[in-house]
Structure formats: structure tokens, C-alpha cells
Length: 144
Image 1: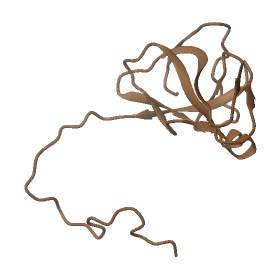
Image 2: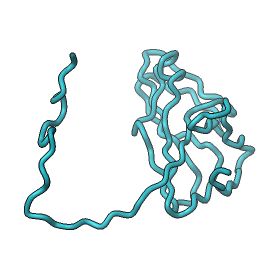
Image 3: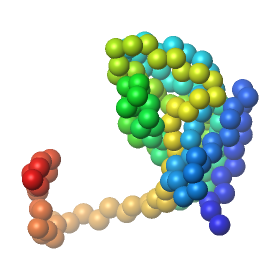
């Protein structure tokens, strides 16, 4: 049995759905029409509001097909919807291509993955335990 999330649809929205059995994310659909100019960013409404149970988050992710075929992505890459948010889910879409892209009501514009989250308690320490990586950051493992 999966996680139960209450949903309220507005403006004739489509219910998020899994494209295939076993998929991690549900597809999200546009609730509006808009022509997105090259390099334009716009918040696009999905027409849904959800009640995420405490202890979970929803991650809003781009669709790979939109990125590869049309140069369409999300301006914040992965967005987080916290359990306390009850407003309409909107996605900051960006057109990275050199051609206008027509967003159509009812078409896929993103996907949503639910994840369990923990509340953290920070404990100050004078030293942190050593690891094999230590302070090695970006590019520290090389490309070979």
C-alpha cells in the first residue's frame, strides 16, 4: 500500500498519474496555455493543490523528453513542496532553446516524486570524523 495524498483540483486540472507501473514519479500537467519564448521563464499552473503528510515532501522534477526534444527545463531544477504547503503547485518552466515552445493545457510539464524526510537536530563539534574523501569537493574523483 502506498502513501495517501489528498488532492484538490481547480480550473479543470488533470489528476497526476503514473505512466508505467513501477515509475517513481507521477506526471504533472499544465492547467494553462502559454507560448514560452526562447530563454523566457514562467510559473505554469498545474491546477492542483495537495496535502502531503507530515514527514514527507514532494520533489518536482523536469521531464527528460521535454529537455531533449525541446530544450524545456525547470528554472530551479528540482523543486520542493513541503508538507505544510496547501497552495496550487506551479512549475517555473524555462525555454533554453532558440525557438518558442507552446505549452498546452493538459500536456505534461513535469513530474512529482514523494520522499520521506527527517527533521535534523544539529550538534556542534570541535572536530568531525575523518573519511577517505575528507574535503575533496567538485571534480575530486576525476573523470576516468
